[in-house]
Length: 74
Image (tube, rainbow, N blue to C red; front, side, top):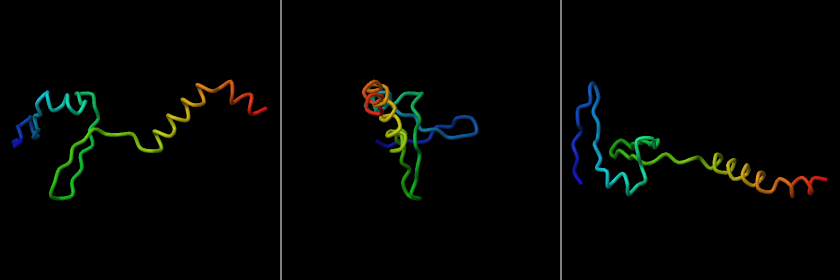
C-alpha cells in the first residue's frame, strides 16, 4: 500500500483506511507508539510494559484469592 502525507494545519498526517485500523484493533482512543531507525517509520499500538502487566496480574491474583492469601499469612 502506497500512501502520501496529507496536510493537517501546520502538520502532516497519514490517513489510514478503516479496514486496516479494524484489523489491528485500533481506534481514535488507542495510544500509538511511533519509532524510527532513521530509514523506517514504525507505528504500532502501544503495549503495556512487562512491569505494568506483572503489576496488573498480581493485583488480580490478590483480589481473586484474597481470602486464601489471608489464611496462608496466619
